[in-house]
Length: 412
Ligand code: NDP
Figure 1 (cartoon, rainbow, N blue to C red):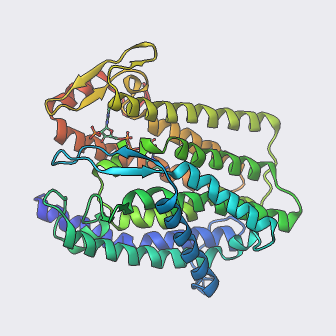
Figure 2 (figure 1 turned 45 degrees about the vertical axis):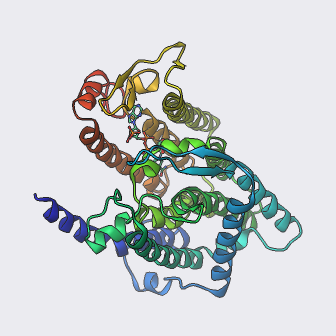
């Protein structure tokens, strides 16, 4: 297929996905909130339950965004250098997420203690918030498209197909002054909102039943720790693929603003109305799985990040083995990166499975998350492989010969 034909085919797919993905999020919410967590066939009731924005949801989302922007702008943080850009320069980023994360919780806790709001209210507004966030993500993506077309530099990767460019974005690092839109939306409003919604759903469970179920506590704690860990290692995001290579368009924008908070809460949404009773051995196995996943996920990501900053550091007590590419980049072959080419994905998947298992086996719906993440990461690994193959040529082939497995050592 020629590249223009491929672009047209991709544009046709994305044109379909632009309405289908938001409808999928609504569908999942409908099944969880109105159909006891069971899959449902399209019906009149489903159409009737389609939420609209409310003044309250608009106020909550606007207030949330303003607070997160202010935290990003005004809390001090150390500066970190981003990855090299095609012209050799590097952008500087302010890393203040750790303080912003805890400050957000302090403000929310104080507000709840002073009875300024009820945590369960966010759960009541879930549908309206979902639709409001969706409108916001589309509006922001239009702005990003315009911004990229006007301010893009010569090295931005665009196709000139408006639909595909709207989807993928027209600029690698759109900024307003010093404010980096991609870094901000990758992490702050959506990632924090994910855990805030978890807690709101737990509060709703308490309101309904007078207790928090063990499954709900596990899910909230696991996901709270996952996001806390992200902020503890915030700088590591600078060596991820999204920051290094992905333009900031609808895909990342909607993904971070809507998909993450409103579908990654799927287990908590399910557990509001279901108290899966877990025997102690299942609880132990689930905690063990989550810890194992975390060790691999964080270990692999940090190994790569530290290696890229200081290639002379030892890995697992030995000098790091690596391939030096003709362009100068180094590909690590020690530690986790010697077992498979994306052990970090394996760790993420193990944690995802642990979260789903907290919901027991009453319904397949909570397992949507691990199935989706598997598809995403397998597809992502393929895309990354193709890009690295183009970027590094025979050096990449040599690396793949040495590290043969993609994600699961010995299997895949
Ligand atoms: P990676 O952090 O693995 O980044 C891939 C890039 O790393 C490649 O493009 C290449 O870029 C570089 N690289 C590849 N192999 C090597 C090597 N051997 N040594 C050094 N550098 C190498 O992937 P992602 O950015 O996709 O993911 C980061 C984390 O985020 C993962 O843990 C993933 O699970 C998680 N994630 C989670 C999602 C979720 O929704 N839960 C979604 C997406 C990601 P280059 O050489 O140009 O630097």
